[in-house]
Each structure stands twice: as C-alpha cells, then as structure tokens.
Image (cartoon, rainbow over all chains, first blue to last red; front, side, top):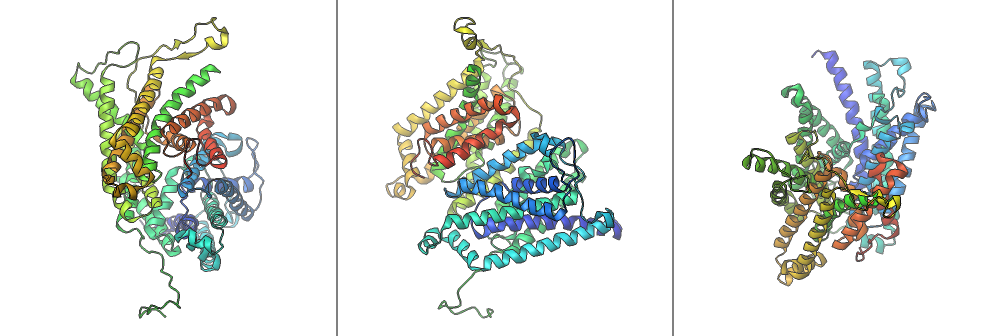
Amino acid sequence: MDAWSLLSYLAFFSVFAGIFAVMALGLNLQWGFTGLFNVGVAGFVAIGAYTSALLTGAPDAERFGGFGLPVLVGWLGAMGLAGIAAFIVGVAALRLREDYLAITTFGIAVTIQLVALNATWLTGGPFGIQSIPKPLAGWLGTGLAWNLAYLAIVLAVLGLMWWGLERLVASPWGRVLRSIREDEAAAASLGKRAAAFRLQSFVMGCMVMGLGGALYAHFVGYIAPEDFLPILTFQIWAMLIVGGSGNNAGAVLGAVLVWAIWTVSGGALREMLPAAEQARGAALQVVLIGVLIAVILVVRPRGLLGERATVSRHAGVSPPPSAP
Amino acid sequence: MLQLIADGLVVGSVISLGAVGLTLTYSILRFANFGQGEFLTWGAYLAVSALSLTLAVTGGGVMTPIEPFSFGWQLPVAMVASAALTAALALVLDWALFARLRRTGSAITLVIASFGAALALRNLLQFLYGTLPEYYTREIQIAVRLVPRGALGDVMGGLRITPDQMLVLGVTAAAVIGLHVLLTRTTLGRAMRATAQNPALARVAGVDVEGVVRATWVIGAGMAAVAGVMAGLVGQIRPGLGFELLLPLFAAAILGGIGSVWGAVAGGLIVGLAESFSVPLFGAEYRLATAFLVLIAILLLRPRGLFGEKA
C-alpha cells in the first residue's frame, strides 16, 4: 500500500472513529455520569441520521421531505428530534426501576428499525435515502481533500462536544448527576429531584447521539435501515466499557481502539474465510466483541481509563504526593 | 374476528411460556436478562440437532407423524434433550459470567453483561447453523374447523386451528400449572419465593441461595427451550426467533407484574392478542411494535403490572 492510499485510508478510519467517539460521549453522559442504561443507542442515532437527511436532501417525489436546508440546520434538527424522542421515552421509563429504561430503550430501537424499514413514504424503506448532501463537496470534490476536510469538521464537533460535556460534568449540575448515580436517597435528601436530573441527562445524551447519526449520514451520503441494527448499540457500548465509563477520555480512547479491533478483525476474517462463508465470519466477529465486553466487565470493570476519583480538598486525609 | 383471537392466543401462549421463565429469573436473580430470548433460540436449534440425531439412530431419518399432529414421538424426546442442554448452557453462562458479576457489580452491570452475552450467543448460533430457516417437520397440516360452518353463522364458522397450534396451548397450560405447583407446594418452590422476596433473610433462615439460583436458571432456561420449540413448531426456526420475541417477553412479564407467574401468562396472552389485532389495523410489518406500545402504556398507567407487588 503506497503512502497516498494509506493516508486516504487513515482519513476514512479516523472519520468513523471520530463519529463513534461522539456517540460514545453521549452514552458516557448517560451511563458514565448518571448510571442510565440505554440499549437504544442505534435508534437515537437513526433518528438523527434520517432527520438530517430529510431536512437537507433534495426533494424527492417518492417520499416526504427533501427540504434542501443547510447542513447545519439538518444537524440541529437531528439533535432536536433525537431529544424529543428521548424525552418521550424518558418520561415513561425514568421514574421507574433502572432496568425498565433498558427494556424501553431496547423497544424504541426495535420500533425505529421497523419504521425505517417499512415507512417507505418517509424513510425510503429498505433502500434507504441516497445522495445526502456532503458539506463543502461543491468546492473540494469527493476525493481525499474532502475526506480530510470532513475529518476536520468531525474533530471540531468532537472537540466542541468534549469541551461542553467536560464543563457540564464539572459544574454543580454534573456533581448532582454523580451523586444521584452513587446514592439517590442522599441526593434526594439534599433536595435534588433525581427524576428531573436523570431526564435532562438522558435527553442531552440522546441529542449527542443524534448528532453522531447526522455526522455519519453526511459522510457516507447514503443511509439504510441496516446501518442502525442493534450491533451499532453494542459497538458503542463496547467502546465505552473498554475505554472506561465515567471518563470522557476513556470514551474517545475506547472508540478508537474498538473501531480498530473491529476493522482489523473484520479484515482478517475476510482474508481467511472463503466467499461463501463471509456471512458466518461476520457473525463470529460479533461473538469476539461480545466476549471482549464480558471479559472487560469481569476482569477490569473500570475499563482502561477509569473515572478520576474526586476527593474534596477539605477532606482530612493527607493527599498523595503527586497531587497539586 | 374469532380467527384473530385464535391466532393471538397461539402466539400469546408461546410468549407466556417464555415470559414465565423471564419473570422467574427477573424476580429471583434480580436483573433483566436480555439473554432470555437467546435461550428460546438455542432451545429451538438444539432441538433441531437432537431431532436429527434421534432420527438417525432410530429408523433411518424418517419421522412417522402421530395423528393428528405433524410430528412423531422423536420431537418430544428432542425437546426434553434440548431443554436439558439449554439449562446446562445457562448454568455455564452463570458460572463464567453472572456469578462473578453478582459478587462485585451492581444489578445494571448484570444487565449489560446479559446484553453482551445475548449478542454473542445469537451470533454464535448464526455461525454454527447459518441463516437459512429450519423446520422440525415438512408435514403440511390441515386446519380443523372448530365450529361447523352454518352452525353459528358465518362469523363463527370461519374459525380454523391446526392440531399443532392446539398442542401449543395445551403445553403452555401444563407447564404453567406444573410451575405453579412447584412454587407453592414444594420446599424448593418455597425457597425460591423466599429468595425472591428477601435474599438476605432467606439465607439467614437456612435457604441454600446458590442452589436456588441454579434451580432458577435451570427452570427459566428449560421453559425458554420449550417455548422455543413451540415457536418453531408453529413457525420457522431462524436465528432471530428469540430476539424478535424478547420485547414481547419483557412486555408480558412487566404487564403481568414481575415475579407473578399467572401475571406473565395473562400478560403473554394479552400481548399475543394485541399483536394479532394490530395486523388488520396497522399492517403485518408493524406487528413487532405492538409489544412496545403495550409496554409504554403499562409503564405510564400501572408500572407495577396487573398482578405485581409494588416495584
């Protein structure tokens, strides 16, 4: 492989890693900082992707939408609609025991998958939506230059999300989230309404996931229901757990690592298996990642980069020598 | 109309059977097991293998159906073998994964682990058996007219049901009554109910909690395997069989109230009927979303379920 195609492959790889990192950051807000178990990541990503595609695409006589709006409007719309969906799910499930949220989000992902597959007038059905506009492609073409430019956009969005989320979780609001996660009764006794905070965190996390979906749609330029199968949820979860939940750096590191493991193992299985066995190879790939999750949960439950311990500087214990 | 009710009851009884196992593991092991659907699938496929093995050993691979059903005596044998193997699978999974996490992690860690295990199990199955649908038998069944045409007018006369479908209803009833007797009349059943209510107190009272956990896995996975075989008997056996039933199972278990066996049965039948009635309203392609609507409705209106204690 020469340097040129290596560079273009790296750009391609990094864009996907960056998009997954955005989604993992959204999940980290929900699971890492608030302890909300969302099994419907793929559903909220799909809402974002389809919303942005419908808002920005060219009109199509066959289906609804195609408003030709600017890409930025599409991204904001993606976040908005994902947030509304999350609000509906959250109101129904968040006030109950924690695993009901898991079941409900699982349900909405299945339902969104059904709508994507069958509501042809809206989503294009199994054939999906083609020719989603690629921002700046008018100037840069769709070659390497565009891939690099889009990489810069993804990294900028990732940086913005990172900065915003770090600010949020370091704020009093973020401290309340963690206190609810650790001890809900104690937080409630201080007058914090746990249900409201959980709902806010859940909605915001899903908005970030919706944005991730929109980033994906405008990079690939084509979305179909099979892009948003439960395996996507599974990948994002693997990223967060491997990297270390409760730590935004862990979420991003996990996204890069798991995506690397995924592409390398996929490539290796494709090399090793004959053409007729490719489908079975893909199944084996999922088994490997599933085992990886289970092993990390048992062996290293905090992930590679665990959450930083926060100890008050007024606490009476003597600080370790390395602390400032 | 009546036909919809009959179809809904057949689908609903398969859901009931799976949901009873789910509600049992949910209340005693205290976590939502996303792997329960995969136990159904594994049960169905293990029965396929056990069936072909039994057929190869006895009489050269041909199954002579027992009238009026579409299968011979080998299928019940295969079902028992598959239930035992699925229970063994659940015990291995508990030993390798869940038991370790029960000691260290929270309940929600167990849910994540079960989610990972479910995807691994489903894809392992797909790797081993491929994606083409399988059948226990190629016999075609003639549906029996339950009510003779003309006797009660044309509305009633349209009701048809195959003997296999009636058997599914019967097996569900038998399994649920058996489980009810086990839970209320035996020492193991009392120990299981005590553990569900308060594990610490049960341990103090001399209940072997580890043994109860193992028994729960065996019963839950065994019933899942039977449900999987029943689903395969009246439909196709595909790698997605259990995954597609997972949402109805959860909806049924929550609708009935977690921990309530009769609630899970009622929930399963209600979800089955709702699915059946949704077909003429929204079209067959949205059938799977019905369980989700039922779930949302019950969470909003009565989150502890129809027969459940306060969650």
